[in-house]
Image (cartoon, rainbow over all chains, first blue to last red; front, side):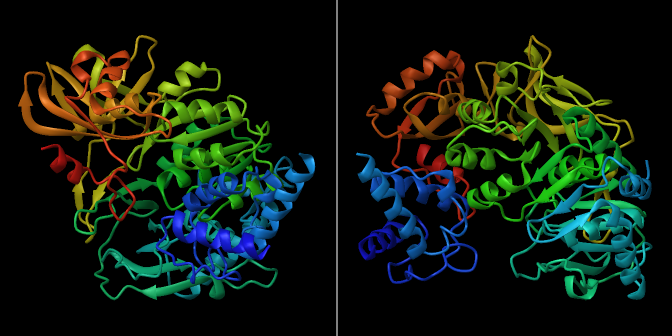
Length: 89
Length: 469
């Protein structure tokens, strides 16, 4: 989990063209309107990046405001998907 | 039909008695509409805001925002609609006495207009009489050159009636509005038709994929009015097809054919493209009975009562429109008429269109965007659209050049390749031969890592034109 959060922070800071530093992408910082303000395009791009980087497919149930509240909430969703994929394999 | 009668009918209608307007937080049921509008009317009256002077309204997609718009329409006010500005205090035209801002506050049981609508006197106000019962919309974002298009409320109702007919709005409909109601498209082709039909309405402010999916799940829309950007977002985010939509409207000529087809398949073949403008409202659209071929490549035929004419050779040229519910003219920031066309006259849309053999229209691009190649008029947007459909191409921008060569005006293309493709500019140029007539093939094709962008996110064409020269 801590590792997922770190990878996610780097992904957001380095791969989304938002001019953010890893420090700014604090694990607790809100990702959307009240925080880092990921816009509509950035959200779609982040979903693709997560799916590529972690080798998973997010389901529509994962694509909600709660899951995308912060990097830590998003990391929890990713970990769940990664575990499910490993069990299925 | 007068707007007051529309509200009265919808509020008293059995078919609409369970229908409502929501923004995800606040809800207003149709039977409660007259009471809520009375309350807002009383609030305006108490502040001596009456319909004899124009006001500016900064409105977001929320239930209170829509109630305010309804109260202003019902009260015969003249108002300029402005999209929410992010904090900055942009001046409103001098002829507007007040600026009303809809605050992002919920509409609870004990809501008060005071808490939701902020009123500021316009410090630049200079009294000027403008006609009553008008909606005004700025046509350009740039302050100096902006013009204010004026619509009679009655014209807007006619325009909305056309959309009701074309898209099949009814009291059974559930209408998703993820586009701003402060623009002509959201206001005239989405909000007003939905109100006219007594349909349930789901307003989304600043939509994004997560918001849209969440609201879609709860609201189960049957009609959505969106943009190519929203279609693109959903095409990437949908993990399964949808069968709830009866019709899904996108607007503007810029939807790529590839995206159109992908998204259309995801929503069960219900996607149609509407063509319209701030001045004319909804001008033309395809119908649901049109084939995918037609829907993906044309704007269909005119709305009821609208005539279209293409001025040019070989059925392609500038598109003119005669619209029974079009605008009345442009005002300047002082409220003086800049231009006032004769009612029923032909209006130049500024777009280049082609009238096809099947009688449908295809919009090819802006008139200023057209270049002359061996005697043929070609728009850069048309070349761009065709090249964007080539397999290796991920993004493309095509720029013209005043210099001429044997083909006519020089044309250069800048392309970003999809991952997995490796070819040079000349190879890609050769591939254009499959898709474009000879005269339209760019003189040069450059492969680039990314297209230069302006701060607005649009392609920096001037930089590309300089690079081409």
